[in-house]
Image (cartoon, rainbow, N blue to C red; front, side, top):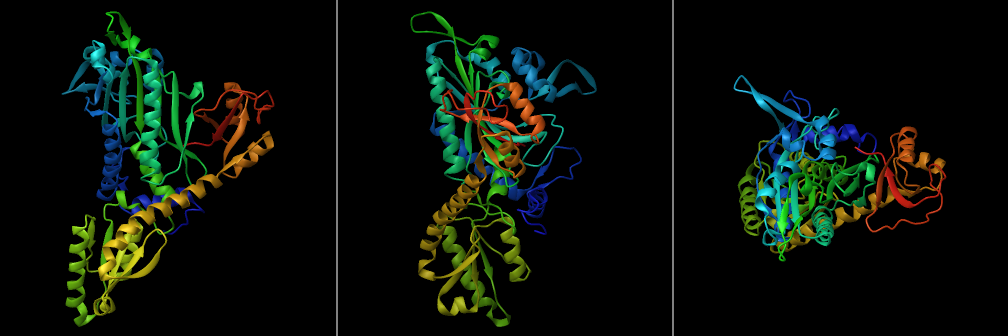
Length: 475
């Protein structure tokens, strides 16, 4: 990289996603990018992780049409008011104007629930837990690959239950699925917060969302789960017959892991001034082998490289022997840029003395390992690299959160790029004043189980504080 991440995160991010061949932005339509193979292989692994967790917890996959009839969007008033300004409309086909407008899905509640009204008839049909892995489309004004796009990738899960209690359990399950993937497997720390009522999902009773902290101090929402209550059930007529023969509306949730934004966080939080740094599980190539030889050493070195490649592949790793006509130094830099977790270097001495040199991308350190111990060393590195990334990310994350008890402390913290924990009065008017006068600082919400109570004085306006909230600038 020609710029350091700590000095200019925006430029660093742009350079990484282009130089590491993640996307090409030259497609010609703002907000729509070409996802290149290296990015798609990482994204497919992230999808796989979430799909495994969803299916482990009883969800089943479906695929709904891309287009949604306008009358479906109109059925839930708050929902349509929240999303209509962002909708792409299909109005013409085959040179003829359509009789009704079709929306490219900005989100799929209205598509799913039009069918749920047909599929759910009795208590025997519940719970219904379905998900789809798709792209959605929103007319965003400002766009940035993986952070905010007009076409972006996510998963959406839609559940229907007989009781409110099941809804609350599902929200906990969604939070746990997020933790198991985003933190445990990807090493990305986050806060799960209950959003204030003025910032909840359009049409929801309550919204709970995961925010991570980017290197510039802004937070990025990477996942959310919503308590929809019975609002959509009443709008779409989704009722079921109880065992006693009476009828009631179902209770619903929806859950959306933002695959695109999780990709952005993976790049931004673990990456360094050399490029990407990837955990083993998502790396398209987990181990790369670089031969180093001169003249007559070639055949002996390549022979050992091929034997090592076969053994590593046989152990289940994604491995590549790099035979490109480039210098070893050029190859080192290229694979470091792409974030490959482990590099095996093999030259004349490695052949003669029966060892290999292992380079680990996270720490950028080398170690010699006997040939007989290579697979055991790789298995240990697979664990150690993830734990190192998690420890480093957690320390960084915690260092970016500060407490503030006064207006002056709030202003100072936001200028330093911090996420702020502060007592807050709970009024939307106060939140809007803070946003207008503190460089766009927004109330992100309260910890999920936090209770309302006496929290002293609001750090911004001085009125009695009812909550301890987190506030930050956001993407």
